[in-house]
Length: 114
Image (cartoon, rainbow, N blue to C red):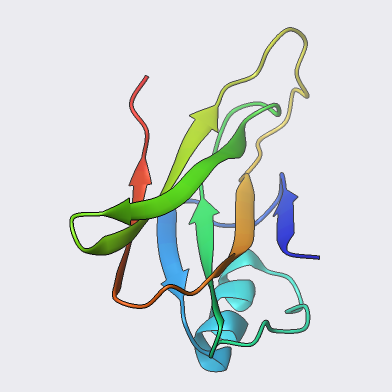
């Protein structure tokens, strides 16, 4: 699997992180509050973790929009999707982690504007 997501990370504040080492992988999963899955090969891949922070209902999620070069860097874009229709009436802390091929150079994570 190259993508993980869920509604309950325990992270009250939003955060996004580029993960480029096994140590970062373990600490990122500790911040999410879950046991780390098997780490990818960081010689050929990197990962991005997006934690949306606390939300008042379910239904929020991260949608990955793509990855590509921009201004000499690799840019990963995502969007926060809001609930549609009925949603779980509970406090949630949505998160997503995804692995991408490593192209080299700087890596930026950007939230797309509506």
